Length: 189
Image (spheres, rainbow, N blue to C red):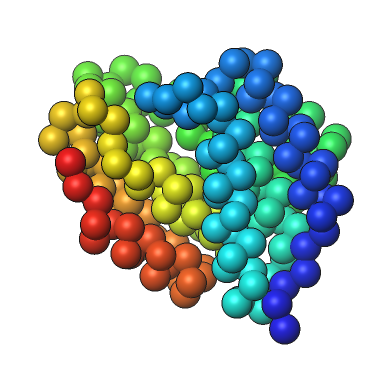
């Protein structure tokens, strides 16, 4: 039996995330598309997985999918998420959020991002598998053709990061693991 998730819980998280990202005038990088497209695509990946993988907490994964960038990219704080969605959702979103204080003194931005990702993956793995699924879905969504200003080296590093995410979190969802593996195999500059 497919996992249940509440349309009302989806709408609550969607409205919260849409407002938070809109207040920052955030767009999908390299486009003029409002950022809400990104987090709704991540939620769509989660909903597709929930349709074929039973016994999962659909509300946790769907709400975290919609909210996954609010701590990192908006003025939302952890307490806001606890107040509106509860500690389990807030903890999931916090685990999915890069810690900006890590390697702030790194010589190259890619070194800092690499250390931040390793830290985030460690924190994600301490969460329920529904949170792992959100990270898989996020990277699936992000493996679109890279922006034209990315160098081949940056594309290679981003693909390697996707490989690392897959290796670390693939046991959470066969459906999403297979989707990410397919996206990685076709990701090119």
